[in-house]
Image (cartoon, rainbow, N blue to C red; front, side, top):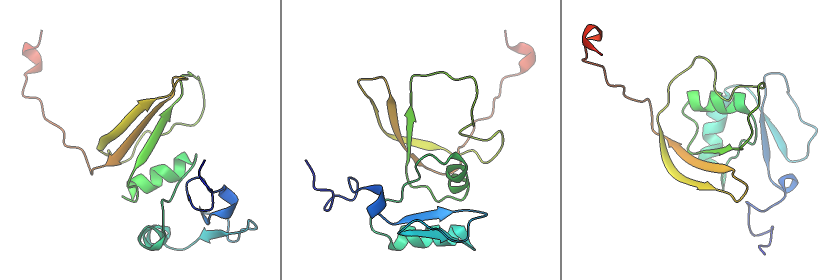
Amino acid sequence: MTDPSTNPIAAPLNSRPKYVASTGLTDSKWAGTTVLTGDVAAAIGDLKTHQDGALLVPGSGALVRWLLANDLVDQLNLLTFPVMVGQGTRLLPDSGPDIALDLVNSRTTSRGITIQTYRPVGRPGYATSTADPKHVT
């Protein structure tokens, strides 16, 4: 077993620094938490440059969409649970920039959960069709 004090991934959430990007919150009552204000993109870029370890975004689809649109995501871990639901918040909006992803790793757990790791690689290139729709059968 790994000692949480020497493994930042295993360290309890409360012992790690936390950053909140919020349009309404100006101060946090949580210990070790910094509210990012002003130019959030610049603040996150600075954290990526100067913060040791990975910056994680657990469960905030809106923030992930914003980070992707602002080219601030280095890696995307997508977990797919084998459950179909008929409602809920979409992971991706109806509109926004298309982003090409490079699959780095993929695995399936014993319970059927798939975990795909992607790296954004810019905007995708699309081929144009040269087929004449009148002659397609």
